Image 1 (cartoon, rainbow, N blue to C red):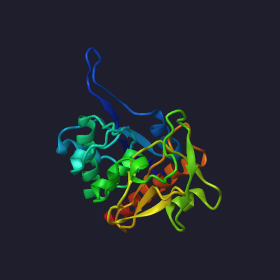
Image 2 (cartoon, rainbow, N blue to C red):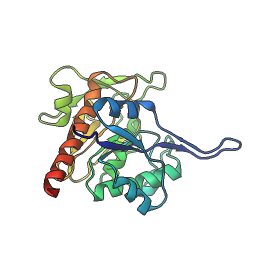
Image 3 (cartoon, helix red, strand yellow):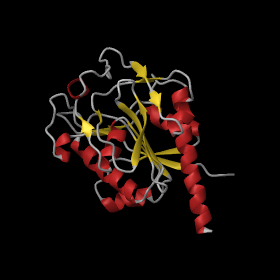
Image 4 (cartoon, rainbow, N blue to C red):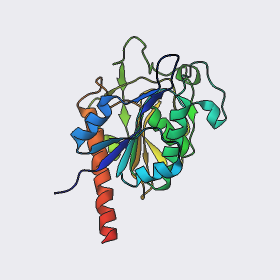
Length: 249
């Protein structure tokens, strides 16, 4: 019987404040989706040492970069827009190191929300810092009154996104004010909102199975069809594991 792949998950982190201790957490939707798709989730806290991160990655078959608050534009040489609510510095420092190491070893990876933005930035792309200002004609991509806010999705033929959604009308949940601007080299856009905002990217490198989605297929506001993104990811991870086994033999 084929072993289930081990899939890493990073976590959200909150520093200690007054009498509240520091703590880390991850929404259950992420590990539940990995379990339903046939993987075993492994939660990875924000580590400080690169050697420690590499030791953990040596044991994993793939990684899902979870959503959360915003990347700090200062770290990429940009002014911080007043709407930015940055990740805790400990999490962001770890996440950026983690994504770089995942890229270096071409580990299968899926980025969700800010995880997709991190993947794009790590590989040399950049971001719009506030959609309402940078793209004033865009549809609303965040509704503070409705966490289940949805918009349409247009997918690229022949992509993983097309395998997930097929030809029918597609609507996905939307909860973001930053978005991918220039797509990183080695990636292509495979889904957009009808207003042109990028909603999914996929690696075109033959040696790297990597994708990112701006929406949240793990959330309670997602549709049953969104779950197939995790199934396609686990299938891609298993394909890479089998190929490595053949090479080793």
